[in-house]
Amino acid sequence: MVVLSHFNQPIVSRAAALYHHKVTKMNVEHEVTLLVDEIRRLGSTNADGKISVKFGVLFNDDQCANLFEALVGTLKAAKRKKIITFEGELLLQGVHDNVDVILLQD
Image 1 (cartoon, rainbow, N blue to C red):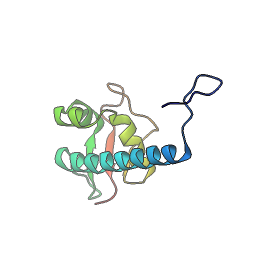
Image 2 (image 1 turned 90 degrees about the vertical axis):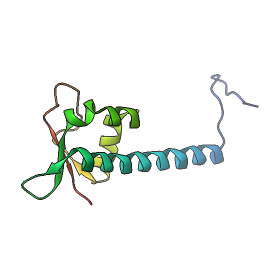
Image 3 (image 1 turned 180 degrees about the horizontal axis):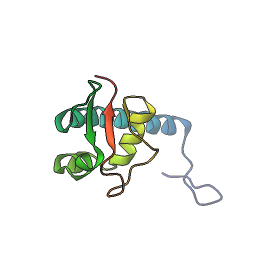
Image 4 (image 1 turned 180 degrees about the vertical axis):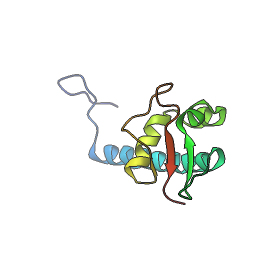
């Protein structure tokens, strides 16, 4: 049974909210791990000895498209965790296809 607030919004218990947070966090970590695997698969070693791949290559790859519901969100999460880096805050298809996504950790 769902209990609604005065604003017709479902009232979520603290336990349910914590469970949702934990599951979401696990999914993000799993997607970041998959992203690292895809960067290794599609990328090559750059002059600094780091593996890098162009954003356009990642975005247009069929396997990546099937793996990631929100590639840009996964890239942002990985950048926040300092697993990858790229120039700018947000990558957009077409505009940023030639931006290098660089793997910082092995």
